[in-house]
Structures are given as structure tokens and as C-alpha cells.
Image 1: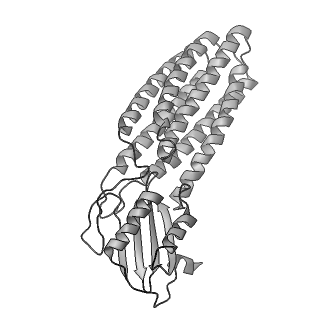
Image 2: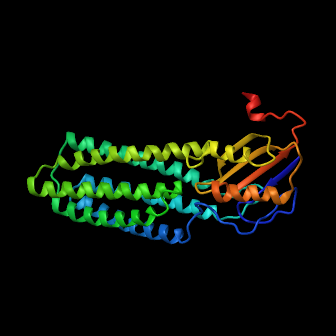
Image 3: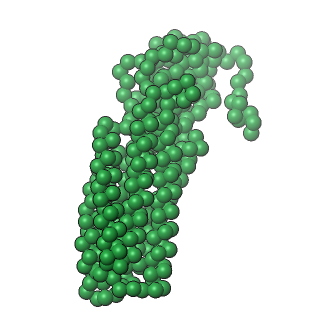
Length: 320
């Protein structure tokens, strides 16, 4: 039985049958400079939280106070995502042999929970304001909310680049985009209140925006939960990987194919290849691993070559 693994951190390994490879590149690897992006977004949002909190009290606007509270939850969410990015750069240890990249999955899950909690708090406050309307300083609300829109829109733009590839960054992007949407809604309601005096517009607009945020956040939470449960990442085409392995010359059968996420940017897989003509040699297997990494985003692939002289059945499937 021969086992071949590729270390997704790029270190050569001298035990068992593991080999390091040159010319590494990671599909969807964490982008450089993300730490600076998170630091800038956290700093800007802390300023907005303070400004909205102060003017929310002065203008008697629960919409501004709710927006400030939501921004505060976003700061916590950004700190979670930032911490996950930092943990993902830590080297593997004897206890955490894959490193700490999976913390980004937990951060995505926590971010989704924070967003839903913030939406619930905002919706509750909006309903109370609809039932008990109060005068609101429309101009102050408009100015402060517009400032929040600019800052949150800029922060969302900073995260937009990596939001498609990295679920953790997508969570940060959704936080900022949600804040920008809320700030825009609050700014519009401020103008309407300024010219019509209809204070009920303020909480009604908040409810509309909350519905939009919940719709987007549900997908984030679902994807994060699936990754936390070791599901196949949505970007991975399992039938295509199986077909590639099955069509390799000399491979008679493929079984025990498992794929899971090491983090929100890296994937791992294991597979058994039945090759009745014998082990083709390390260089041949190296080529398969390199192709899996380059074309199928499998950053850590472990292949077990078998002659097919005995019957193998996946231990997990055997329990079913």
C-alpha cells in the first residue's frame, strides 16, 4: 500500500511517503494585504459607531441608534474574520496538523449568527417605533446616515475583491454591504421625515432593509455550516474529479474519494486508486497531485495506490 500526500503549506515532509513539491501556487489563497484591509475597515467603523451613537441620542432617532448597534456588531464580526485570517497563517503543529485555517469557517458561521442577531434587534426596535412613533430630527439623521453610507460603502468595496473566493471575506463584505444599505435607507428616511414629518417612514425602511440582509445572510450561514460539517465545498466539482482520476492511464477503479474544506480558501481530498499493474512510481503520482492542485483546487491531496488484490470498502460507508 503506497500513500502520497501533498502538504498544502508547501513544506517537504521526511516521514512516511510524503514529498514536498516545487512550483506551488494556491487557488483562492488568502490575498496579501488583507490584514491592512481589515484594520482600515475596523478603524473606520469604530468612528461611525461613535458618531451614530452620539447623534442618535441627540436627534432622538432609534434608526441611527439601531444602525450604530448594527455597526458595532459588524466591528465584532470584522475582528472575528481578521483573527481567522491571522490564525490561517499559523504553521501546523503536532496537535493541529492541518494548521488553523478552519478557524475561518467558524468565523464565517459566527458572522452569519451576528448578522441575524443584529437584524432581529433592529426589526424589534423598528416594530416598536411603528407602534409608538416619535418625532425625529430628519436633517441630522440624513447627514450622519450619509456619512455611514460613504464609510460602509468604501469598506464593502475593500472586501469585494476576495468575497467570491473566500467565505470568510464574503462574510465581512456582507457585513459592510448590509451596513451601507441600512445607512442609505436611514438617509432616505431622514430626508422624507425632514420634508413631510412622517416619522413612521424611519422604522418602516429599517424593516425592508432587514429583510434584504436576512436573505443574503442565510446563504452565508448555510455555506459556512456545510463547510463546518466537512461537506464538499460548493466550488468543487466532485464528478469531474472522479472522472479525471478514473481516466488516468493504468487506473482501474477509484474509491474512497473524500473532499472537504481545510479553510474558506483551501481544500483537501483523499482517494484510493486501484492500479492492477502496480505502483507507477512517485513521479507519476506527483503529476496527478500537481494537476489536482492546479486544475481542481485540491491544495492537499492524498492518494493511496492499491493493486486490487483485496476488497476495500470505505469505513464510513460501511457504518451506513
